[in-house]
Every structure is written in structure tokens, then in C-alpha cells.
Length: 135
Image (cartoon, rainbow, N blue to C red; front, side):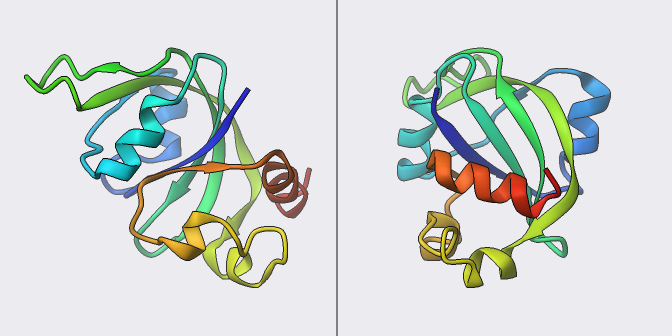
């Protein structure tokens, strides 16, 4: 299974919204590189949810409930969406500042390409986020 980080503005759609809804369609991705990564999401993949804006932190873990498929609201086969379900809210959010200073996390695209909304992570990076979040 692969691991991805998905960014969202919490005032638009937050991890709490995902917990409330129990399932959502992750849409709105238009950047070519982010779409490339979103297209590679498969059912069962682990998805870290990152809040942008004032929070700037990973706040929860979700799972891909589907692989990528064409956005049914758009007439553009290049634009894809993924269904996701919540797994758990992190006990302690892991902020961007920690990603920048942690030797395991400082090589992530979150640090290198901060405007990207979808990016892959490694198993070691997921493990480190879980450690920092309190298990």
C-alpha cells in the first residue's frame, strides 16, 4: 500500500468534516504534478490529511475507499477524484515546522514543494509522523 499526504483548507473541508461525513470525494485538484500523484492512489492506500491556513499541520489519517477515477462533475478526463474514509484523528497534530526540522521528514515534498496539494510519503515518514503524533 502507498502513502500520500493530502492538503486541505480546514475552513473549506476539515478532518472533522470527514469524520462527520464518514466518506467524501476528494476533488478540486488541478495541478499537473498533484494530479499525477492522485491518479496513483489505489483503494486501501493510507492518506495523511494536512490542514493548510493557520494550522499548517497533519491532523488525521484516512484511507482511500477507491482508486482514482474521472471527476464526474467535470468534462475533463485528466481531472480525477478519490473517495476517502476517516481512520483516526491524530492525538497531537504534526506541524509543518516539525517537518522542516525533523531529519526523516525534511525531505518530503511538503518541505521542498510546499504548494503541492497531493504528495507521496514513505513508510518511514508515515512511521515518524505517527511517533510525533503520540502513537
